[in-house]
View 1 (spheres, rainbow, N blue to C red):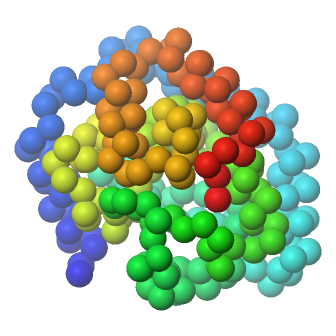
View 2 (view 1 turned 30 degrees about the vertical axis):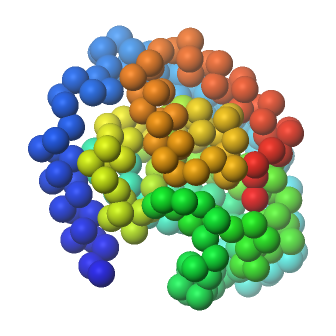
Length: 227
């Protein structure tokens, strides 16, 4: 399957079927949300810099020849592609091994997740439990490709399987956290995640964003549903 062409076709469907007012944001909201994203990501990068250094050291110690940061193309707002950053939590040839594991998928729908993934490294298991592996996405937020709060950015091969209903997730900028993360994370099926995302999009507000951010911090310490 030509994933790129399939995603392009999906984007055409998105443009022709999504209502113009779905997920529409006022200028004030967009500006205020962007200001919060800039301040929040800068603050996080500065305050968490010791964590970045420690994780970098641990990843290098376990695998001196592998990269510290894992970069991957993701689909953002209105189908725009961008490069998302994470701390590498898997072996260097994880993408090549995916086709051998795809049948073990434990998430229903257009996603892939399995517990005890053999590709995950020792340090990877630890940083995934607390979502520390996601911290480099603060750089994506600073660059304006992501927001602190919003739907999780999907892979191109996932979007290729989206229905018109699912495509509505792409009507806003993707986020580092959202309702899916605070309501079960990997314990939630794909259809539920879509419902959570559309609920968030239809009820966007600065107040809701702040609530989700604070609840995310709590969830990170509990490590519930993370693998």
